[in-house]
Length: 378
Image (tube, rainbow, N blue to C red; front, side, top):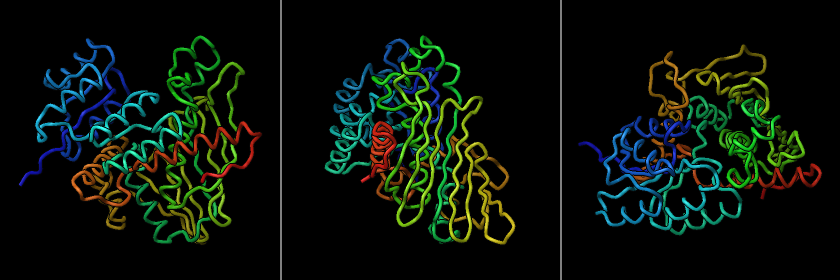
């Protein structure tokens, strides 16, 4: 017996958006979702043209969120959109997600969750009241070998954690940061659109979420040093953050968008009393496992030695590379299971991950502005 697809709407992600195709392709991977409506662009002509291009019926192409909510409410329950993906610039995440929750829709939201920790807490309270599913797409947690890393740490394969290290280096802002006029054209460098942070909010939160996801431990306190490069630039574009976990475990998180000529160099290493695990996003199908006194092991997707979590996240036989679309597809698969009341632990980043991310951003900024002081993440 075939299972009815979950009816999905999308806000943003049209035109030449990078993240739009990632979400649309990911949602189709396990045949769990059907895109039935949305608002893809604030310009009506561009919005309509794009929606028609991807095959939407004209009566489900909406001019804005208010029209989407109004017209979807008028439909029978078995026709109405069930979940909405929010793929807009950061400053729209909170008002859109809030309205969607208030109207009873499940939400899948790009990160960072909001532009402030206070807004994130408001969404947390609303989601709890409404008992709805809310995912925040920290995409990299969907990779099979990241989930294998998490399982191995849970199983004690590297012993007690004593050192954690994450680096997320990009170079795309370097060509524009040195010219004040060029900066004005980049929305991530505009606080009214991006929020309080550029680099830490954009890529630093990925690293923070990844460290907490794979270790299963909350980061307790941080000390941050940010770089703005120019006095007339108000948004961080580079930063180093020292980390403290429970006990004597410590670490470092390095994030940059002025790492000249870097593309998307995101690496994670966890060191324990017995060994270590390393993973790199630009080569995501390899997980390196080092044990004291033993040869280095390289683990790959699709093999029987992997955990159930990694195996469930693998779509292809060994030797067939999987990438960013597959990672996001695994997150959508986890959300679909949760919507139909069959949740799998760790299968998608939820609202709590988004709230923690916003708290991390504000603690980093507070630490930096206070003269690089240790700041507790409560």
